[in-house]
Amino acid sequence: MAWNNIAKYLEKFFIISPPGKFYQKEIIKALNEIFNINLSEDDIDFRFGIIYIKNHTISGALKNEIFLNKEKIIQFLYQKIKKSGIKDIRF
Image (cartoon, rainbow, N blue to C red; front, side, top):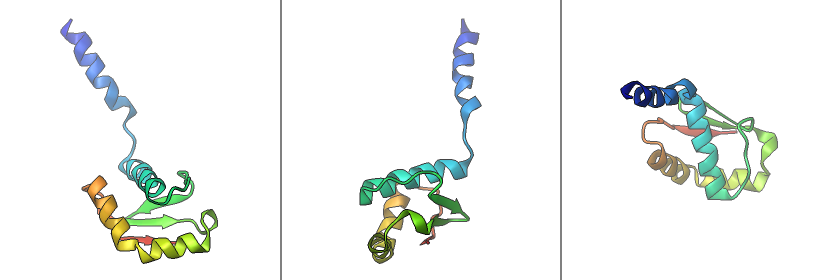
């Protein structure tokens, strides 16, 4: 009986995604929540603490809005993902 409980507990470790993918998904959720836009995993890259948003996915007005509120967005993301180390947002 104890082995069944351990087996169920260990099952969740078989589907762990890499940390970069986890951060990428959380960043997408946060940006979708803030700006009410639909971004996919192909639209955003997260490398070395920098969020890269691909140019073709958003309008110029939204880019300006993101640029003007960059610090607020980074603070919001830091509150949601404590150990992400997000430093910048780039296009």
